[in-house]
Length: 250
Length: 295
Figure 1 (tube, rainbow over the protein chains, first blue to last red):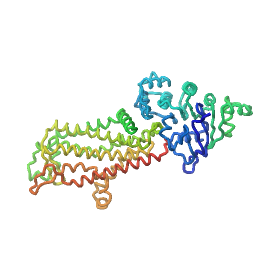
Figure 2: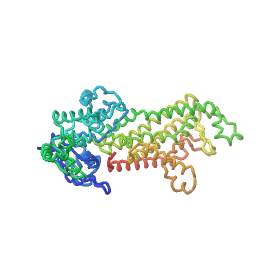
Figure 3: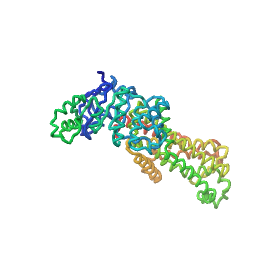
Figure 4: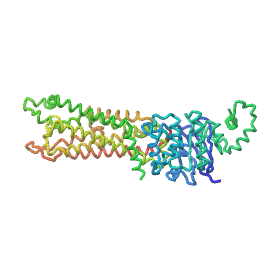
């Protein structure tokens, strides 16, 4: 199986704090890759390094077979991302956002495609409304449309369900599955909603205090989780949640 | 080239923001108020400058109070305050985006950070130029329509400079270009400060504070600052535009047409302002390339 992303020995230190510590993992092409960890585990820092927002203290990142450090421009033209909760430009409307981000990705915007994209994320009825009038869920969906505007091969979504209501979370899940299964995109999703990751991920990476705890297929994790003494974890409805808590010692 | 694409986007964003038009509205309003005041009480305003000479000469108020004179008066009064309006936009360029979370969206697209900072600075410079064109429209064209044209009388301390109305227009054009250079320098300072902030209030307030501090040092006129800081302070050189209205006189005291009293000082001021622009923007690019975007 080909890999889209290879990370080796990735480390980030902020003064005394080591946010990411010698992290290595690989993301197979076409998979939905769940990235799990508690708050402060180093998920967002790792994702920011993958997107060149933060420079690593040490380690190598290879995307599409090319080192990120020396091929940033080519690589980022094939990547789309949502990093945490963007507020976007409140004085612009949805279509204007897509025009801006498609031009920034080196793509000439075609109005029909932009409207199709907004329809796909469920914003077809609010094309020309100012973002200032959008709910948080609508902003998150617009951010996803902005990430998709260059038809990326790799989509990196950092906590994409933050601030969404239950319906919004379900819609986002369906969108991710659609993009993976129907369009063959590789998707990295970080989330603290373990049940959501359990429903969509093929492969899972669990980190804690910046270190890798485990990387395995969802199938392997479910097998391990069923072997746990579930009597000790009666309140956990999901296998992944039970396994995650046993790994992180909670 | 990606730079021009980003510049186009930045200009689009600037002119879609309601805040941008506050500056244009404020300038129009202030100029109209000054023009109204001079229309009603113009003679008193001229007396303020000519008080010591009223016993010796008969002041031709009607001749002095013309469109060119009013325009120079307007520039004297408002150019000192325009840096605040420039900082409102330029200080927001990077810090405002960091605050709203859009900076990380921009920085994950296939555009270099150098292009991003340069395009944001260039967009601020375009905004400054448009603001000055707007000011020129109201201050010069508006004043000429309201007060008519005549020879321009400029007061410099105890001296009078009289410039023929056929020798004036190029001086205004040059003065506006010089003022644009000075305000672009303020934009460069704001963009530089904006790199380090997570919300736009910090760089806007910091820019205004820096301008106020250096203006006070300049106005104190004490030797310790006059010999050290003031010759290199940008606030000293920002006022260089006034130099286009000070003329050279012949031995019998007649104005030499097309002359400038101290052209070397003007060139020096322009060069120092350009130096500051280069310094601030180079530093902004350097810092932004190294910056970890954590906002």
